[in-house]
Image 1 (cartoon, rainbow, N blue to C red):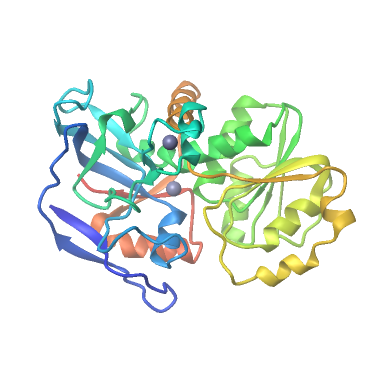
Image 2: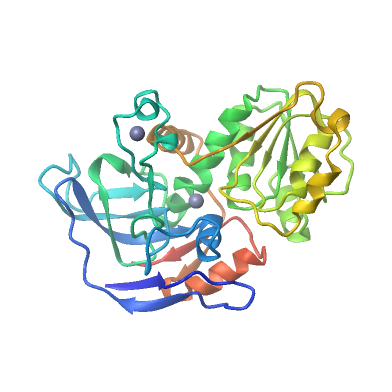
Length: 342
Ligand SMILES: [Zn+2]
Ligand SMILES: [Zn+2]
C-alpha cells in the first residue's frame, strides 16, 4: 500500500518535506482488530508536534494521522460486530487498558496505557490502517467521508473542551485561535447555546475573516480589547501569550480551557507578564484537555449528525500531505485540511 511516513523528527521551518512516500505491505489485523481501507484522513495540529518532536512518536518510521474514515476490509475473530464494507472512523484514542481507575471511572483519556493513533501505532496517512474493533466508530449517514474525518479529532476534542468550560446559554465564550477545532466549536455553540456570544481572538486576518463569516459576535487580534468580559475561554493555539490574553479578559470565576497537546517554546517569556490580581485572582481557573474518550467521540458524532455540524474543509492528495502540513504550520487555514485517499 501507499503511505506517507515520518522517518525522523524534523524542523518544519527548514525541512518542508518531512514525510516521504513509501510502499508498504498491507497491515494484518490482529484477533481484536479490523482492517480499514482509508478514504479520508484529516490533518491535525498534533502532527506538527509529532514531526517537530514535542510529542514524539513511539518509533520510526511511523505513519501519522488520527482522523480516519474508511471501510472495513477484514477483521480478526474477536473484532466485534462490524460488517464488511461498513463505514467506520478511527480517532486519536487507539486503545486504553480498560482496567485502571481512570478507564473504569470514565476517564480512559488519562489511562497510563493510553495509545494514540498515528503516534504510538501507525495512523491514516496511508491506504489502509488497523484498529481494535472496540475503538472504531460508526459514522453517521449525513456526512461525506471528507466531512466526517475532521469531526473525529477537531470536532470531538472541541466538544470535550466546550464541555469542560461548563458553559451555559447566555454566557460569553472567547475562542483564542480559529483553526479546525475552534470553527467547529463555534458551530456547536450556535446550536447548543443560541443566546451565547462568541468572541474570537486570532493573529491572522484570514482566520478573523472566517470567524466573522461564521457569525462571531466580536473578532479581534490578541492586542484588541473586547467590549465585554468572558465567562469562559478555549485556547487552541501553540503559543503562550494567548493564555495571558484569555486570563486578562475572563471575568470572576472564569474558566480557561487549553486545548493543545503541547505548547511551543517560542514566546514562553510572555508568561512573565502574568499579574496575580489581573490574571488569576477572583477564582479564575485553568485546565488543559488531554486526549479524548470514546464517549466524547460517540456523543459528538451523534450531536454533529443531529444538527448537523458540517466542517469547512480543503482536500489534498495523499502525496501532498507535506503541503497541507506546511500550510498548517504557516496558519494558512480555512477550516480543516483533509487528505483524500480512496
Ligand atoms: Zn488531533
Ligand atoms: Zn486504563
